[in-house]
Image 1 (cartoon, helix red, strand yellow):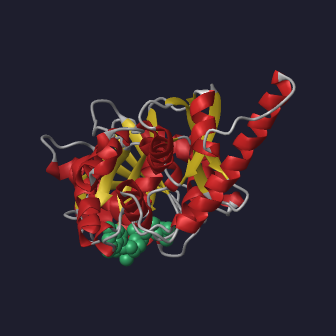
Image 2 (tube, rainbow, N blue to C red):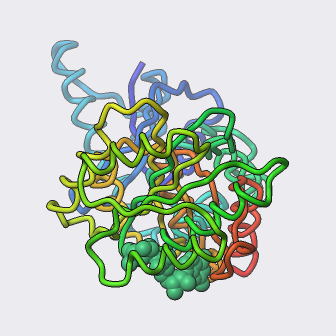
Image 3 (cartoon, rainbow, N blue to C red):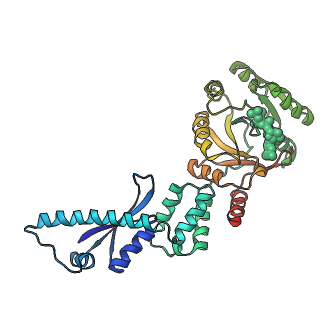
Length: 360
Ligand SMILES: Nc1nc2c(ncn2[C@@H]2O[C@H](COP(=O)(O)OP(=O)(O)OP(=O)(O)O)[C@@H](O)[C@H]2O)c(=O)[nH]1
Ligand SMILES: [Mg+2]
């Protein structure tokens, strides 16, 4: 048998080239995705065909004359490499021609913010499937895959806990704390004892902002400056069901603030501490990795997404969830306290994303 490699932007197109040349009887040897020197990802599909068929289709039946079988094999291997190069050139030339259904769907998802690598993995797993031929089916399949990958943190208040909100500056941490406080204290099946704790001592007015909400709701609130004061405050508040901790907004590059916050997170404390990363739905693709990589030092439990009302494009955010697989806990959908808060659900996020796809 002779191995020949076909190259295309997606595995199906590469395989189709092989079938076109040799018919349905080709044996698939491997299908892989490779980043080429020009930075493009391409799919290489290797197939095996009987030597006679290879000679007939490639050279019109002419036989290769050689003195021994090893040099014949070498020659054939060289021919294989040459043909791969030709296939690559052909693929480049065809780049401007009509795209396959799978490629069109892939381009749509990429244009909405979903990472090409994630899409390629799924498309590769669908290799030879009819789903690739039908745009609607393929879109549904991809949405189902997204749905399966997304994770949601169940809302649980059955044991005393601390919820610390961390995140970049101005994403809505303090506003969300106020919404959560109102929800837990007044809007659940039973009232929970809620206290607010402020580590946000960096910003002028930070204390007043939280104190203001606490006063309106008549909820206990404390500001602490350091780790010792934090531990003392937790002892004083030991009877409370939920202690919501507000922190200073941090640029992902502000090492000093990170180190200070890590001290609080690493404390040995007699109740559960959940760290929630607050992220805006308007987060830029370029900033995502930096935000996640830096904040993940704080042992993140879940993500709270804010500013749902400020964008129609949720692909970048979805992509973030697909890559990092962190559960989402709440969505903030506007500025109103306490109304504009919803418990996170996959349906809610997917509906927004589908709305965005439909517009395309
Ligand atoms: N449109 C919209 N605005 C929001 C939302 N959540 C918060 N905001 C607004 O965003 C601004 C900043 O909110 P804060 O709660 O102070 O944000 P923060 O993360 O505490 O900010 P720092 O403490 O400075 O890091 C305020 O004007 C809020 O009203 C939301 O879901 N949608
Ligand atoms: Mg704040």
